[in-house]
Image 1 (cartoon, helix red, strand yellow):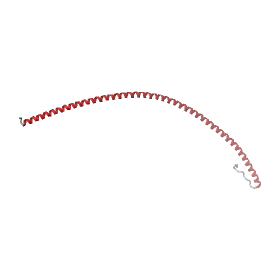
Image 2 (cartoon, rainbow, N blue to C red; image 1 turned 135 degrees about the vertical axis):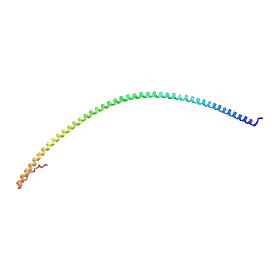
Image 3 (cartoon, one colour; image 1 turned 90 degrees about the vertical axis):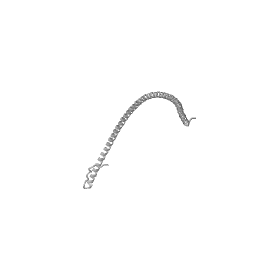
Length: 174
């Protein structure tokens, strides 16, 4: 029978071998797990690349569609700008024509107003002259009558009074 020391050595050797085999098994299992994880990662990466390429294709198609629509819109904008420029030119011509018509109307009205004022001035002058002449003749007649009355009064007063009245220096107005 082997001795105790031999048995302890044998057990220690066996434990060391089992540790080594356990480590090897752990490494092998880790390698298998790592290999599976790596394979799963590669699958995930491949799926991601497929999805990304699909998304890029969608983006590229969308970009082409947007570019096409923008080109159409730019063409429409250019057409509308041309139409707008044409309409603005027509409106400018109409406005210029209206202003010319209004200017001629204003000039005609100015001439009519000036003519009317001239006619009114002539009528006022005519009436003023007529009334002045009328009143001036009446004034002169009244002055003559007043002088005659004063002269007659003086004669009467001289005969009745000692002192004769002098005729007023300013004519009496009635």
